[in-house]
Image (cartoon, rainbow, N blue to C red; front, side):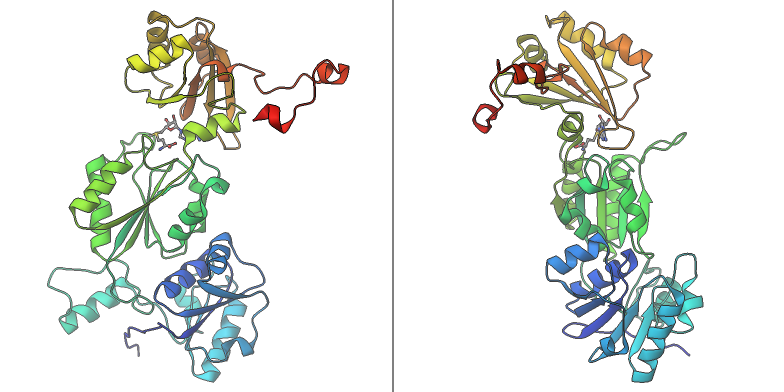
Length: 411
Ligand SMILES: C[S@@+](CC[C@H](N)C(=O)[O-])C[C@H]1O[C@@H](n2cnc3c(N)ncnc32)[C@H](O)[C@@H]1O
């Protein structure tokens, strides 16, 4: 016999056993509700480290023992190990403390739940209960409820700049937002590996392009964000790079505000700077160039960018510029750029398959074609793209004809 209850954990001690993403997700949700969360695990994942460093959860770095259940109101096991979860559930049972289990990878919650005294109800159970109590208007349904830990609070949207692809380049604040997410809306640009770390109940909505499939239109993405937040969910919109650099983040913010939905932006490391940096290309360099234009390759190269290339007064960084490379180069040359202007193309920057192609403006289209350059790539046009810009001539250094590089000279 099961009774659906909403449990108020605010100000109460809750034990979370386990250090992985599932434990992080549950610990974050409990901490958000104001619970005093004790995490017990020999090792914890980065999301939990962040929560611990920020003082949201306490961490005891050890194997769980019965003493860890002292004074707790609720236990949540999420070790991924059935035997450990069952052992902790048995301790909780003997102390009359409610216990939930997150299950193990590949094991249905019901199988583990046999040992646990409480569990998160299914959406259907909550819908039936709420409809029976008259709390839910006819026709309305709850999508992914979690009444054991969640009190009613307004949903919200967090636009997270995921950086260029390497999970290490996702910010601490971005990871923290992901640990609290009910839904992650992604287009699979950026640090997609982080999706594997999400807790088992987190829904992932892919609105990106896949082979043979068109991307979800922007107004539909906006609708998904608003709709989910209105259901009371915490929605993370995970975007590649920075949300506000050619990322249509501004439109998503406006859509949320128009709908009266709370929205926050977590800046990200833009591929416009990260991919060149990872390839050893500084976008500005003292004595070489001190300004940058970031442009959209879908548009014709602007007059300002053409001037910058011609006068060598700014580095031009083209995003989404692989398919239009020939048109971009043609326009720069027609507008007076030197054919010897250095160009670098950084494909899949900051990922294990990063590749850099260098050429001059006059030859780069042919070179890129020969090397079958593909998107995503960042095109850098200007003197900073010249090979060897940051290389030090060791022979000259050893000769003594060049003084060693000092901090002052580098500044
Ligand atoms: C729609 S724009 C999004 C840009 C993103 N908001 C940012 O700040 O990086 C997508 C373009 O970003 C660039 N891009 C994104 N990730 C990249 C990566 N890892 N390496 C090279 N270029 C990348 C490519 O030019 C790609 O076509």
